[in-house]
Image (cartoon, rainbow, N blue to C red; front, side):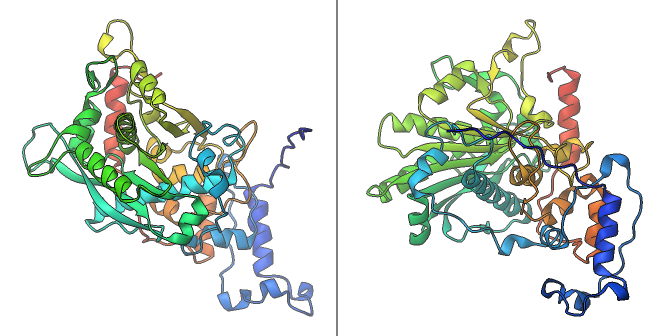
Length: 451
């Protein structure tokens, strides 16, 4: 096989030139209008779009070239028109990590990209259900929820601070026969949201390693607490997951199954703990292949724990933003603090870079670098090769990203959205506790945890 050399894309024109071209396209000079209108532009007069106000952006906020139709697509809510899915039945095991995603990460495989975005949207549903106290609305109608998941903190604080038991996710199973044939198996999903309450942040700061059992494997105290602590008249997150997964595996025992655990931030840590326990169950009884797709996850345990998860055949693909501080903690801070030594990441890393996005400011703040939608935006745009170029044909809508991270989106694109009449002030959004993240980062900086 002959390898083709990588060809770097030509440098895009600056934002001012791009906006000028758009303005001429929307408002052409009368003498330059063709006698027969272009069918692609036939609807433009009816849009009554105002002239674009061209201003000189900052040098570090130049945007890349996008056609009018592409901009309109990205700045509109295209979630109702998802990209078509291909038949992955012959290769679902590879996409699920059977070969540790060999040759699928760089460049990022198209089907794997779609799978990551699909599972990321499940996490969005878990966030939305928590913040809006509603039943999760699944982005994929071929799945149905079979069990709601709750986590309980063991920290005792006054009742007015925060409820100790909160909704943290759900378990769903694919029930659509056509989708099952497309995927090559019936998929069971465990979706877990990230930190959202004061007590959960308090648990995050309990960095000491504690043993899982009699072995050498140890995990972060706060993560284990949220995973194993039962609530008042409510079983622990651990027992509910094992009970429900065992029930579903027995219910569909004559079918080919897979278990996919997906989570963001704290949910990514809990996802690995859940997968590890499911792996232990697999050693005692028949259990389907289990894979973890995590976004912005911290380290969970020591090296012995990482080796234990891998020996059980659990496949973990961690999506990591190069500028996300949460993915760098906890870690060792020197021989004087032996109880923090030994933290190791688990599985394979898929690295993205928020500075590569043409839409995000290069100095995007910590909240943006850790935001779930920013992660999905970067996965959708991830190209291949040196520099991880942002692919020009990225299709994911920018509506949710603008709603949640407007201050981190380059001003030129916010202005374009307003000019095109596509800037929405209110969309289905997932609030992110930026103040809490700043507190978390400041606390960890004080003890010099970051590399």
